[in-house]
Structures are given as C-alpha cells and as structure tokens.
Image 1 (cartoon, rainbow, N blue to C red):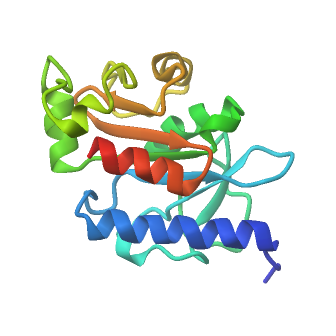
Image 2: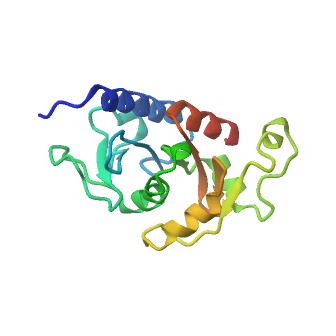
Length: 188
C-alpha cells in the first residue's frame, strides 16, 4: 500500500471526523449526500465518501480520492464512487477557488424542508438572520448526473459559502473543513 503524505492524511482524518459529526447531528440520509475536500497539490483531486457506506462508517483510510471527472485516483481503494455526488462537488473543486476547498452537501430533514419552501430561508430567527444576504439558491435540475450543470452551480453559488439547492438540500463551502462545517452548522 502506498504511503499517504502527512498533509493529505491530516485532511482525511479531519474529513472523516466531519462525516461522524454530520451523522451525530442527524443530518445524513443513509448513504446520500457528500462532504468533500480538495487534496493539496498541483492536480485537482478531492476526497469523497465511499459509495455504499453510511456516514458513521467513513474513515480516513476508506475515503476515495477522485479527479474532477469522477475517476478514482487510487486504484487500491476498493469502493466505488457515487456519480451524482461527484458532479456537484467537482463543479466547485474545478473552479480552483481558495475560498472553496471543502464542500459539504446534505439532505437533512430540516434542509430538505427549507429547500422545498418557495420563499426559501426567511430572516425570522437569530440563526437565519446570520445568513441574510449571505446565502444563494440553485434551481433543482433533477439528480445531478449531467456535467453541464456544473457551470450553473458555480454561477448560483457566486461569492457565498452557503447555498440552498431548491427541492434538494443544503450546500456549504469553506477554505477548511472546520469553516465549511461551521457554515453547515449555522445553515442547519
């Protein structure tokens, strides 16, 4: 087995911990939704959860490293990749914006409920007012399997770190795993 550089290993540990936190807070929907992190280096690779494992089963060593085309970079990892997950995340990772090295996308009950409301998130509570004018929306296009949606996702996100995918769920980004998680925590 190939040695993993320390910087990537630390990223893997932090990302696996974020999966466990999302599970702990009940924001996961079985095996669906994804938390991804861009791997440091000159190639656009990112880590994603193995398809078929629950969030509480994700570990640093079983995270799958893929490129922006959804191809596994590490042939030694036996797990497949969820095509729908890679489209949304690759859009943001392809932009190579330092503000968005981490992407978190959930289908929590609360997130799905607010994503289904025509008015979106209303500024009626302390939590929601913190996101007032700091939140974007993306129109639902069905299961994210088509690569042409990537441009529209980036356009919808704009300069924000939090986005509601209408009739779909929540998405946050950050420079780091803690930053993206904090945005997700506030949005949830």
